[in-house]
Image 1 (cartoon, rainbow, N blue to C red):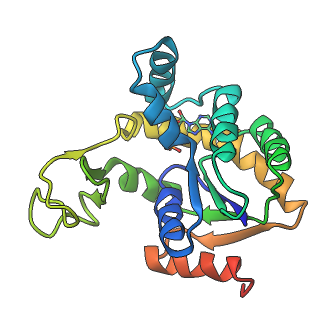
Image 2: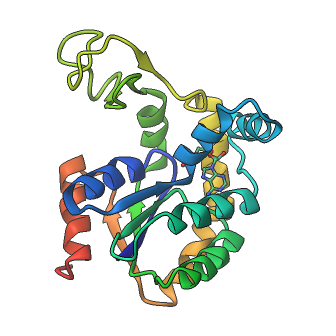
Length: 217
Ligand code: AMP
């Protein structure tokens, strides 16, 4: 099964993709994560990608589609995929069709996480994660049980994404509205879009997504 999680930054795509990965053995394909890995390389491409990401603008379609193509080539046919943060533009949606076909796959579902944009800024600007194991936290909604100590691994160092500041978040939202939201009709025309309330509790969102994947919704 191959699915897309679609929604603005902070809608919970990454959180839900990690849960599906753990629950169903699907593979999360996050272009944001791939680009964050690429930007750490001290290469011209790494620096270019870092500058674009820090502004909140979108990295070029060619770069992200190549990342997805390369990653799919490493998977076996039985492994299901969750596209998280890709496609984000109409050309990327067209590339994804071609890439999936080349890998003998097809799209089963596009799940839209519907959210209230004003709440997203608070969600995003408050988020941080364990620098060691990656467990996610939030200044307001999910602090570690013991101050400055990761609940999962006991580490004391945390990190924040450099693009999780209010100004960049506003740009990322605008990019979503202008370039990503318009790709929904492409998938609606194929009858594969389902909408989930992304403002609900994290566990409830997972239950709703699982119901869609199991054909119960
Ligand atoms: P994300 O982790 O999905 O929020 O992505 C973080 C940043 O990486 C975005 O603001 C973009 O600059 C870049 N990015 C991630 N995925 C894509 C994509 N599919 N197309 C273009 N840029 C992307």
